[in-house]
Image: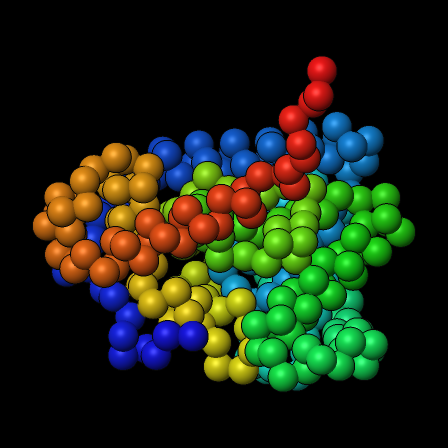
Length: 277
């Protein structure tokens, strides 16, 4: 985990602001997508894990617009490392902002049971952090199977491109409604649909362990990450031109390029051998 003092920040990050018309188009497009995915599955029900963060808050908001509050069910799944404020925010999103049915399920007993079965991993911060995320995925699908629902993911474009998600954890879902939005655009759309500013602008954290923040672990601010992804990774601009355009050093661009390349396996189905015939 990177120390906050070492986080790379662009001197002149790209302006990824969407116009009001573009924001409304994304709003309608995503809501229609959620309705289409659930209908194709033969249901009108959706389950979503609520973390109190902006990604799950926006996704659940759009799910309610698509399906109605009676058809969206939230799971708040705290562990011993989750900040109480974030869990309180998650409950407020469900009860006050969206008025959807939800339950709070503590995951510590599940995590402890798995670690008791495999105690060798108890001191491994990353392994245990991923276990917490995968425990939530199991609960999401348990609820979804029970309720004849689809599981909505909350992954955005920025995090998908650098593999900042847990394979078979928060990546184990039926769809990612906000998958086409960079983090900056997630915040813009959240504000556009009426998410309170305190939620739309709060620092992001996967909370895999105590004190974790997304930017701290990646070693990059989200505006810097978005800028490098748009210009260099997806846009094809050279490393040096990208560094000059946004005012970062080569190390920041190399960090993003490495994360993108090493996480390619997360964005694909598990491979099998080529057919013999």
